Amino acid sequence: MGPMVGPVVVALNWRINIVSHVVQIQTEIRDPVAIRAACGRLSLPEPVFGETKLFSTSAIGWAVRLPEWLYPVVCDVATAKIAFDNFNGRWGDPKQLDRYLQAYAVEKARIEGRRRGHTVTEQSLADGSIKLTIQVGGAT
Image 1 (tube, helix red, strand yellow):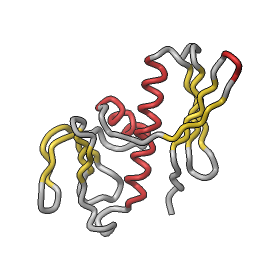
Image 2 (tube, rainbow, N blue to C red):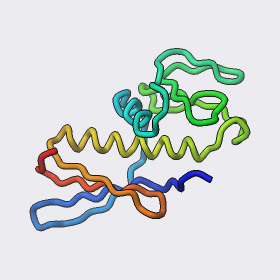
Image 3 (cartoon, one colour):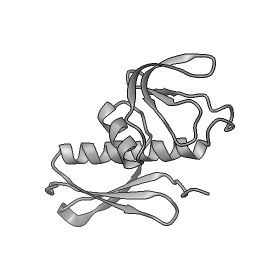
């Protein structure tokens, strides 16, 4: 049994008045840089852009190969939709997709935090969730 995957929780610690605020992130796959970073984080092969054959259809976007999945997951950054065929879990464990989506959300939050000049730290929690702390105004 693989590691548990929980929701991504981002904690923002503001320097002024030291206020902590926890938010939930709804993930939309729109950033090729974060797609690639999530693959690297999980030691997956590099994503490949193009048309990818699924079982009975094809999809255009960034193809991500998940462990033990028969067909890749295809991320269309224009629509933020993903296409995949895992035959209701028979051709790929849905937990691997959850794990990838979690990694994407973490990497996207890290990229955006650092892009704005904030310090980003990460902590894995026992329930499988990941806590990101973004220190506003901090250096990376």
